[in-house]
Image (tube, rainbow, N blue to C red):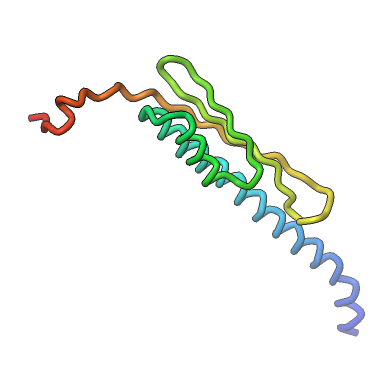
Length: 118
């Protein structure tokens, strides 16, 4: 009796497990996009060159992510977008992205960089 019930429920359990794994993969990719955008925005707002900020974002972003820089004279904006396949080779793809914005920090004067402010 129990075997027949298990045979009926087993496909549902596998479907739920696949959904849970897919959700974890998508949320993980989203968090990596958020981290990459945040780190690149922080570096760019400090005045790091664009190549350095892009390298920082590429290191933290999911594989194959697209990194876009924008903003104006006062702000810097970084958007990181990626497409993930949460169930591996199955033909189902999910697009995730994150955008971070920060104010540009003023350039520091090298003559006063080491002095303490009273």
